[in-house]
Amino acid sequence: MTTNGNGILSALFSAVAAIAKALTSSSSRAGTPQGSTGRGGVRPTSGTATLEPTPGHGGATETIELDPRSVRALRVAYAPHRDGAPDAGEIVWTWVPYAERDGRGKDRPVLVIATQSAERVYAVKLTSKSHDGDRDFLSLGSGPWDGQGRESWVDIDQLYSVHVSGVRREAAALDRNRFERVASVLERRFGWTAVA
Image (tube, rainbow, N blue to C red; front, side):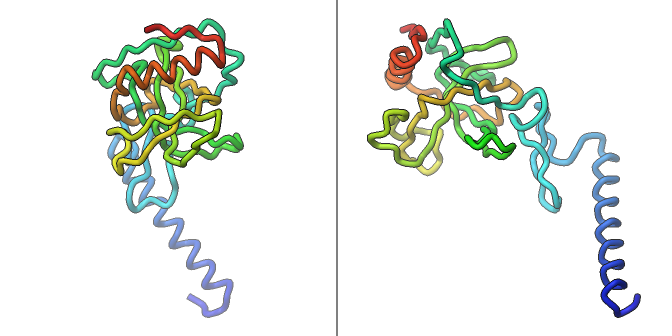
């Protein structure tokens, strides 16, 4: 190896290429990508240099932000079932796009409010950032969906279409009283039907 700048860069690029090739070939030999979730997405694994898609991020299972004013005849009904599938009344974790719509987002809890189709549900996102006095947020208090016991607020002005395979995990079922408060606010705001 030479000691000039070009020689060092050339050696560095060769080393990086060799590492990338080794990582790629070890993943393909295993038959499934490292970090596979088994549900249509893959998670980052230790030792990898790139972040791979997580459930709900990318492809047919991507979580999609919808204009809630464009959704008609939505029936918001409490129907949680601890079966691993997202049901109305359950708080689940999925990737949610940022409001900037630039391809970025983060894994966060959402409250499932209704079924959209056999493969998708409607959901509203939760945040632990305080929104006291903000008319677009409703306080839920704290619950088992937040491991740190923080108070949560539901964003009632943003609606998401979540693919059932885009759900990373089922966190908790919201109690009926809090769910009905959310449903009532959504009914008043968007004209949807809240079913008791």
